[in-house]
Amino acid sequence: MSQPEWFDWAQNERNIGDYFRAENPQLFGEVCQLLFDGDPMMIQLIAEAEGYAPEAGSILRALPQCQSEQDAQELLFNVFTQWFSPDFAGCLDQYAPTAKKLWALWLSQQFE
Image: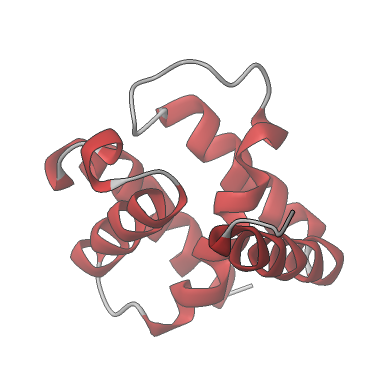
């Protein structure tokens, strides 16, 4: 039996997350915690911050390309849409509070 098409994509994304966790474990952990605290999908199914590790890796890969808080909001929405589905990811607006915190975290990292 062959693997589903998404399996290779998900494994690649997890590898990217592992890379970012190794490169900057503090930032990786902070992004996981931010996602856990903000629960942008409003599902409250993840029991610990590390449950957001796959999404955190996808976010950290693309975050350097963001130029604004709005870009960060769109990034969050896109990442959750990719990891789950457009129906399950909800609407762009629900990512605004988490994007605001993510963007502030990212900017603070640029000046350290």
